[in-house]
Image (cartoon, rainbow, N blue to C red; front, top):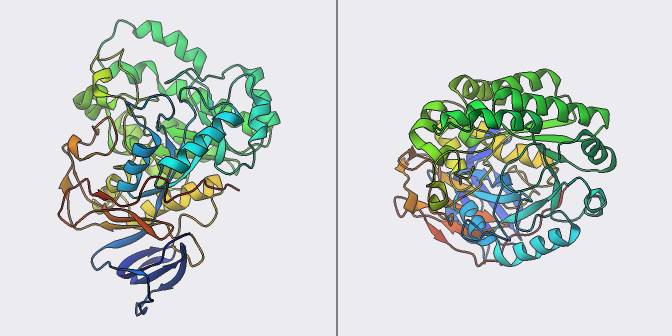
Length: 450
């Protein structure tokens, strides 16, 4: 059962613009939005005075790796969900490269049951594609908690890989829903890795996994989607070349995303951060970052995500090229993007469009992603007046570090609310980590997808 809450005097980020007023959630549903305020208190409801705060829909992160089951030293569904809530994320979609890989209905059912006990946010899961599990993929179509199919066209973390044309054709021809692709070309990748095996400087990573490697796979996946009239979502776009090509070729079947870190970091940051900035596909160059911003603003790119993929600093300490690729980000993504907004790179309404409305639209998540009467009461109240420097010790992720350590960031969520119930809160000017409020398993549910 959802909660009852009355939020007063907030700067509400509505689809029509930002207005000051009140919002009431009744039984977990947004019942009334009053742009001029004046809503009376009802018995039993929590009152939040949001003077000076911005009220956003709860953000949706459709690309996380919470490592559960299999690698609890890196993350699990409880710690990942806690971090999400601390960052104003009220729904997440988790990837299948766990241990074991989530490639069957039984594995998906297990993860959904696990999430029901461990999370404080709404949740959904991808089934992983293999060369031989089309029937398993078909068996979970329309199942609550299952958001789509993940296809790794190039090698990354884990052993999920489908790159042969006949197997890709079989998947696109014989499944439904959304196929999300990690678009790097495996043949080009394997031909290039030996050429760079002598390099220990991290700059080699973007040279090895180059733009052409990504562009070949993006074009190939797009052709498969159009040939088979299948919805395709291309994950973690990294290059201007891909974004520019998609601006002319994506059509109505294809959507795409960009990670917060690819909008924030470039080659200079990679040099400074070292293996903390190591990920697949790589962080590229200033020109790529600028192009990604341009294509995000013109609508080519549909949403902003994290690809939250934590590894321990101990495992990272072996250095490049042997360190694992991936970084945490779910608890910092919304503040980082709101910091970009306050620095005039975009607007607060843009951030809501990209991190709330966009993911809901891409995956057909009903009644989420916007402040609209009748929509679910998933909300976050953020402080845009205070800038705080984040450190590794401020994080909830189990690995205990962030690539943004030392950066001054604003937009920290003061309240994160799921179905009308507060799940995480901070005091203005208090401990940057904030306080968890909800018990694991007491709030949040498996998402339903259209």
